[in-house]
Length: 219
Ligand SMILES: *Cc1c(COP(=O)(O)O)cnc(C)c1O
Image (cartoon, rainbow, N blue to C red):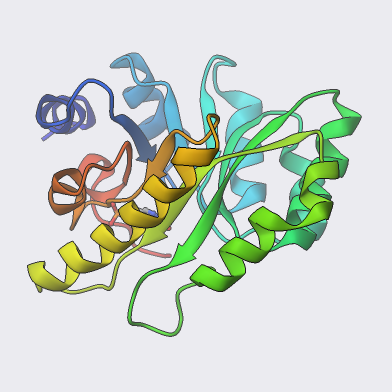
């Protein structure tokens, strides 16, 4: 299978309003170029340095999504070009993104990452922390960021009921948020192993890597 064929067979299964983020972390430029040549424009990376190196050499109409955990001291390297940051999990980080966005006179779109998995190791906020951030006075003062939705990673499991439960929970938080905030439109959930279930829970954005580019050697 080629990258182009993989992409097309995934896109065929997605409703047109769902955004496919092609997760290209660890993959060489030539792989990304193949996806680009097949018409794809939205790529996801989880390391700022790697994303920046790829941005420098690839066509400038690519939308770069940061899907990994973000270190505050590295936000400055991607502020110029990043189009969506999925993994935001603190007000401190939002403040730094705001500060860096200001330097470029732009607004950076962010998703808050929620902890929905059973594993302790996955990053993210709980419901109380989400409300704390959304209701904080300080957030109102950050004019160069925009929170446009939520992101989550489900437990690494084959148990479909478990996956449904976790995605459903995230969806319910998203729906609640949407009722009061018109800019909230993005629900980022679903990866290679679980995106079909995420689609059934009505995700609006899926992040798919290995099903497009093949298995990764490193992580
Ligand atoms: C790597 C990664 C993905 C894609 O994983 P695949 O299983 O290869 O599709 C999605 N989301 C995040 C946050 C990731 O780090």
